[in-house]
Length: 365
Ligand code: BMA
Picture 1 (cartoon, rainbow, N blue to C red):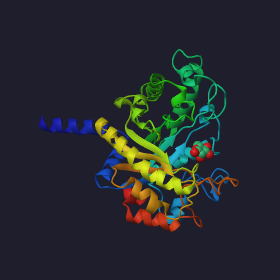
Picture 2 (picture 1 turned 90 degrees about the horizontal axis):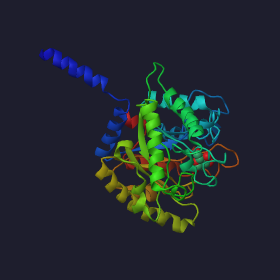
Picture 3 (picture 1 turned 120 degrees about the horizontal axis):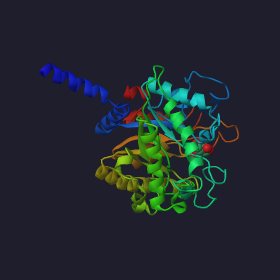
Picture 4 (picture 1 turned 30 degrees about the vertical axis):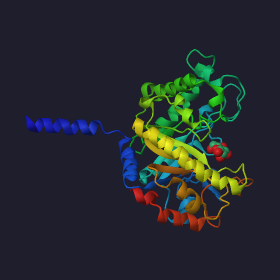
């Protein structure tokens, strides 16, 4: 009898192992040890001088971060904008199959994948930054004029998320980060373009569709408010603990102000916002992260060690992700957030990693 009970308990624990448990355990362990996982957007898909889609390169072996440090980032960020339209390439030119292959390869190497989504404005056909078209979110909710059309687009995203599997058919865990920076007003789902109720309903509708209807159990749901003056109001747009696993801040070192004010601005505001979010995450039992950050163009030689490091010091963030290094010839000399061979801050980046308990891929294996 006793043996049977033990067997049943064992079987139950195997059956209840969730694809996301391992990721949660890795993130929690890092926090407990005072370490931070480093992530880079689109790291395996392109870099300053190369592009897997344009070269039809399926190896996923290149990475600007690896070229500089010898190791891949622990977290790989990927993006789905335009895949909701059935496009073969996303808004940044990445092939859909390569995007899936990057996710799977990174996971099989022991890494963690996070996915963002900048969908087009479904009313106007413009991009995610097109703020026209009236109450877009309201039109997408049940009963709204565009609800059916929207669900079809979500269906394509659901298909894609569902298709990210290991060769033996196991879904891989994904930190899924829809409707990010919703406290700003630069995306059609932003603060000025829907009410708090509409935003929360929109999130719950997304969750219900992916989790309840599609049965996707491999998603960890991350919400990413961005730094604004009214930060204490952001929890009005929090759909509830049931629908969120990770609470993260999106905050960049501003390039829209002169450097002599931008660096102090970042260093003063980052700790204030993180302190507020840390308190929120603690009260709600969530993991804290810095879901997007960086300094476009890295025009300060010691940005990593002397600006970023002191700004986040002491906060229990599980990971931070810096944005992409575009390979687009007309933008690649300005639009990058991670070092690359021959680019700025190579040495300072390595120093930051070595001296600040920052984990790359080998650190979480
Ligand atoms: C932005 C920029 C854009 C890009 C978008 C989605 O911050 O990098 O060029 O299209 O993210 O990745």
